[in-house]
Amino acid sequence: MALGSVAQTLGLLAVFQSVAGGVTVGAVLIAGIGLLERYRLRRSAGEDASNHGGVDVAAGDDAHHAAVGSSPLQAGRH
Image (cartoon, rainbow, N blue to C red; front, side, top):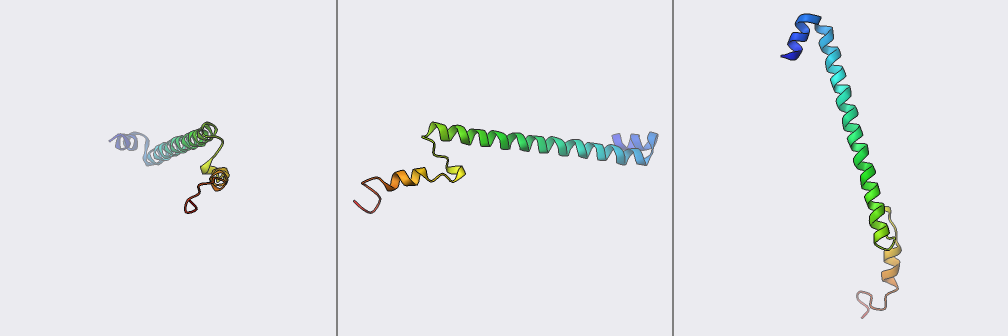
């Protein structure tokens, strides 16, 4: 109804311009939310790694596997 009243008073071109503006604003908001969540995920992964002896599984850190491999009671060898 809002776009109909805009078309009635300002013309059809104004409807397309307002829809394009709304789509642009929505795309910017969604991209901003996505970037914020990506930043939070990377930050929380770093905090988890510092709390657990520096092993960052998400980054492909192999320190945990090396530590387990040096254990005298490895799986299948005891």
